[in-house]
Structure formats: structure tokens, C-alpha cells
Image 1: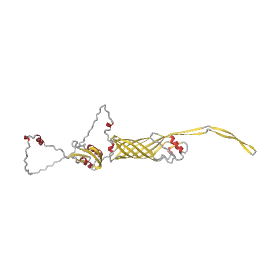
Image 2: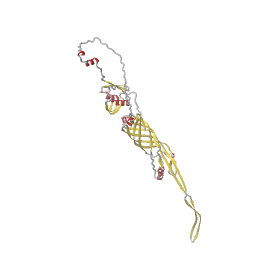
Image 3: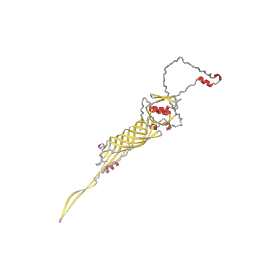
Length: 397
């Protein structure tokens, strides 16, 4: 199963937009990158002045964006200005350059360069002139990025730690925010069919168990949408499922194989008061006649299914181990094949039977989710499902 997350972001980030952060000893640079990814806001700052390696431990749930920025920058000698999607971080105490003349006097304390004491006097202002000018304020955005090129010698082999080093762990996405994933799912089903019957049809139930065999060409394909919040996820979708069986049914009808006796003549004799009867008989051998019948058919039942499952995720390294359980509603979409008649020997078409329109099934299982790309997740697992109802209605088997 492959799932692709779809993030929804606004065009303009508001200062009161709610933000949720849960970090432990995470540097300021990673926090700004996380805010950029979650809210769309960008940061502009001087890397020579701002200490981006300072670590923070935060547990904020739906705090306004301006409160989060206050926590990050207030009290550190820096301020910020939020305009649109941009946050400009500036130094509240800019560095001042020393006067060259004063610097020279400090470096050369010789008597020739001694500072003359200035005699202060009273100065009276007789005229004041105010000059104004137009100042144009321009914001300069400077963004820095570092690209590390890994150099490998022919003798060195690239391992999995190098291939997946740029993938972000899925555990970082287990936050208290709603996330939506969509993808395709493919499943191979190894099924086993159980047969039960009403009293009086034990022989037919035995025939069904004897002459039916489950095919391994059963499977399911479709799309799935998953909504997650923290470690809990709810999934649903639309799938097409097909179950296959083999019917190899045979029986024979035997006739003949015995002597048929025919009476040719009958007469009697009288002896006093007694009457004795005598019969002249002949016998004819009826030869044995065997009639054998056989049926071989592929039985297939098709369903359009709507699953509803609950999932709990357990972070392990970069991947997630999940536990899943739920219900599946299967809508019958037809089928083909033969079935064994219950009132006599022979077989008929399954389209003649009263098929149940909707069949519910239970599901439970576990699996693993692996990050393949920033927008692609591979999911694999083992699931056990069982139908909670019979396939046919008003049928003795």
C-alpha cells in the first residue's frame, strides 16, 4: 500500500494562527524550519548575529503564532517583525563603531598625542533649523542553505544509512494535528471456505466439503483515505474484491447386475382335499450399467467493499508499526460457476441461487509503514478477515 500526504496551506499566515509544537532539545534552526513547513511562514535573519544552535524544549498545543515567536526571540536581544508570510529577525542592540580619532589616541598614549582638556562654556541657541528628508526602507531577504556533497571512493560501499539519510522519521508526524493521506492498496487473499447445513443435509454438506477446493487467485484492489491525529488513525475507501474456488464434482448411477425371474406357466394338482400349485419359471440376467457424470468449474464471487478501520501507530526508528481492526461491508456484484444440487444428484448455475446482497466481515491485523519519499509512504502488513454471514439465503448448505 502506498500513501501520499496532502498538506493544505493558506496564502497569508496570520499572527494568531494556531500552532502545535512538541519538541525536546531541538535547535532554533530546526524549529524555524518546522514552522516554515507547518505554517508556510519564512524567516529572514543575519546568521552572524543570531545563535541558531540554541536548543528549546516546548510542549505547545494550538498557541497563536505570535506567542510562539515571542518565546523563541524575546529575551535574547532580538526582535521580529511579521509581514505577510515573512518574519524578519533583527538585533535590538546593533554594534557601534569606535571613533577613529579616539581609537588612535588610545593606541598612542605618548605626551605628543595627549588629549587636550576641553574647557566647557555656556552656549546659547539663537536659531534652530529643522531639516527633513524622505527615507526609503527596504527589506533585504537573505536565505542560506548548505549542500553537502558526499565523496565516496570506489572501495567504499553506500549503505542504507546513506540512502535513507534525507528521509524524515514518520514519528515526527505523530502530532496533535489532523493529517490526511490517500493512496492505492493491493491485497492477496488466501481464503478457506467453511460449509454448514440444516439438519437432514449432512450428506450434501459432506459432498460440498469433499469436492470444493479454495483457489489462491483471490485478491483485492482499490483506494484508501486515512485521517490521523497523533497516534490514532481512521481509514476508509473503496475496494474491488474477488474470491475464487474450484468445484471438481463427480458421481455415478448404477443399474442392472442381477437376474430377473419370469413365470412361464402355472398348474395345480388335487390330492384329496389339498391343492398343490406348481410354477414353471425362467430367469434373465440384467447386465450391469454404470453411468458416470463429472463437473469441473471455477467459482468466483465478486464484491465492492467499503471498509472502516481504526489504526494505532507505534513509532520505531524512522518507521511506524501499526495495529488495525474494523469492519468491511461487501456489496455483491455478481459471480459465476456451478453448485451441487441439494435435492438430487447433479449441478446447477449459482446465478439461480438467492445471493445475499450485503455481507459484513470483521478484520484485524498488524503491519509496518516505511518512508520512501517525502510525499510517499509504503505500507505492508498481515490481516485476518472473516465473513460474519453466509453467502446465500434460503439455501440448506
